[in-house]
Structures are given as C-alpha cells and as structure tokens.
Image 1 (cartoon, rainbow, N blue to C red):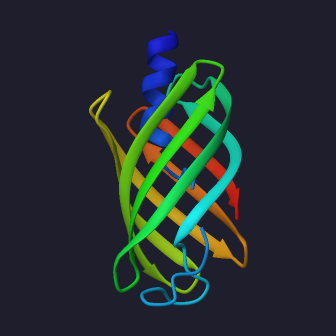
Image 2 (spheres, rainbow, N blue to C red; image 1 turned 90 degrees about the horizontal axis):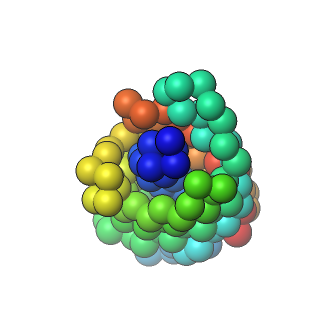
Length: 133
C-alpha cells in the first residue's frame, strides 16, 4: 500500500508544486518563476487521502512557459517529478511526469499575487496544493 500511495503522490505531487517569484523577461504578471512552497491533500483512486508538504521551482522556458520541478513529502515518503506549464495572467495548464513510477498527469494552476492553487490529476488520483512564495 505504501508503494501505491507513493506512486500516487508522485503522479500528483508536481504542483506541486509546487509548486515562484516574478519572471520579468518571459512571464505575464504575476509570473511563476522561482521557488514556491506549501501543502495540500492528495486523494487516491481508492478514496484514501493524504496530506503533503511540497516545494516547487519554476524556470522560464519561453514566453509564458515554464519547466517545473517539484518534491512532495507525505507519511508514505518523498517523491520528485518534473513538468511543463503554459499560460498567461493568473491561469496556467500543463503536464507532469514522474520517472520513478512512469506516471504522468495534468496540472492546472491559478495564481493570485504571491500564492497559487495547483490542481493535479492522473489515473491514480488527484490533488490540491496551495503554494506561496
């Protein structure tokens, strides 16, 4: 069960994260570039829930596009993954991938000032992470 939860977390943990400061060269305001941290809840396909603490780093990769790396920790363990998001203003969407468990999914990010809400989904569950600068 622990491997399943860890796999699920990996599938979802990117928003992770979570997962920034402004990017003046590429981003529309408010921008994602930089480091973010926070926490939230993952809901596994089994219905089980688990709290997580996450850190995410966003690096500009083009106009309104970012490469993302995130690490999340839960009772089940720590997982890392990468992703890519694109958007403008306060809304970003993209995908993530966890090589350890060969799992991918979708990310939706809503930014408001110095905080963001990351919604993650994959075949193994979903998650909502709130991150701040």
